[in-house]
Image (cartoon, rainbow, N blue to C red; front, side, top):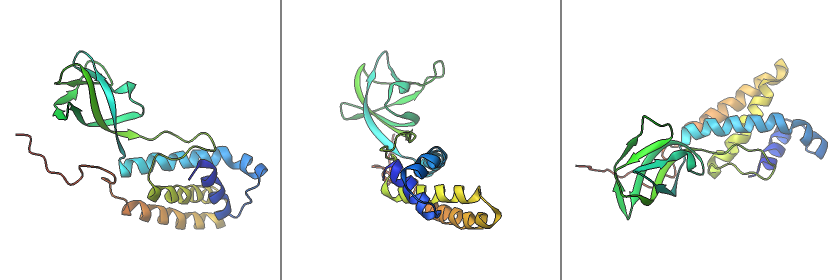
Length: 181
């Protein structure tokens, strides 16, 4: 579901048209609401990704990763897990007990914000309809007193849907017990 699809769905659910002029009028406001929903859902779902990173002088620069790193989950080099800890002297750096070279880093990330009409949220399918529900709730809550009651219903739907999401959704080692000793 693209940003354009989210906006069209929200406009239909709020009883507005979805012609080009209406889309342009509401695009900025509804995009802001959609990005707020993405940030809120990311804190619930805790999306993770794995990518290759370079180890230089026993450190990995987390600022060089493709997405904003929230927390490093694991680092693997040559198929073996490496010990790591945060480097307190420099922000965004992780000290790794491994040889210099390339490693796989798995980390929790914050999805990119939507800006263009063709951008898609970096959250799974279950979250995408919740984004529309949140956008409709925020729009209805900012209107007249009569429509604010409708906003409460959408907020309740959003919160109920969010509670059904699992925080480890998509995690490859969600049910794995690890003995490090």
